[in-house]
Length: 494
Image (cartoon, rainbow, N blue to C red; front, side):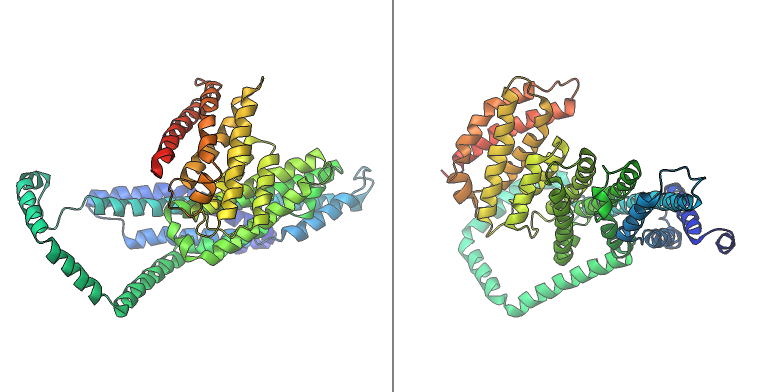
């Protein structure tokens, strides 16, 4: 590295280091597999020393990535726009100064390309580490599930003891009063000190989990990479310049792509946490709230732009491209915490606006997903639930079914409709929820859902199973679940 530094710029050296790290990460799986094969032959596990070598290597690569993506997109965007605006249209040979400006702009574009490569590398590393954590968690769960009883008896012995168990049950029935008295005695013995012990044990477990994450590769990612991701995800002034000239359009495209890639990497991080470390979310509600506010800020800036009077098509395309990623992150975050995000009424209206004006069904599905998870919050969010629930029923499902019934209706509406139905089944799946009676019952959602059953069958028939098998399967399943849900809700309160 020192020799390279003497012959190349600091940026070039950083690129070489990052590319070398990417090669090493590609070799990691092969190396670990070889270590595991050799360990299996010896009838042992991979040694802690061998595993630590690659763990340290991963940390080193993440540190390289962290340094490489420490980049101020706002300053860079302002500089890029200045360069693009001051380069004359004349031939660069006749304008040497303009040629220097163009070379600087090209270098900046190359730097951003490399940053996107670094983000992809970081996303792959975290996804791999998350998969390892999930596999370990599953293995531990399976080992607990398959553990033998303490007395060592197998299933055959248990079957042979059915008669003895019946005798024991009869004896316990005779001693019912005595058993209840024992329970009362035990309840009386459980005092405030016992509760403090339980809480202390829970606190110790949380601290242990937090320390394990902090010292892991995941902890490095959380502390070193995520802050840079959020900085790179912020839309810049370049977002509104796509239609002004070819050079400005190229600058706007580069910075929008950087925003999109950063948000995609952040979403990978959220997905891994959701799938294998969901408890971490509960332990860090402050970070969840901060990330939600950040994503809302990104979306509000982009939605505010798209709401401008007749925005240029090029600007609108880039804004929606980044907005799609931001809403996707919000969906993953809201889903990971069971909807417990600090969404305000104004933010809910903003998400409804996105859902209603989305240029494609992919973005609409994401917006529906965010709204549906927010609607699950309880207690104390009845008004929000009513606003979202009625919107999903009337404007997402019913409106789409009506549109499909018109000549020229297409199967593209299936995805948001199926997503909205799946969410409604979860939202109103229990009459004990504080919003079920004031919203589902009083707003007469059950009769509305009954009216949707036949149109849903018709919608399913518009999907060609040979061309869109997964889509048709999802539509069929949503229809079956709708029928079952109607039957369930019709008898739930009887």
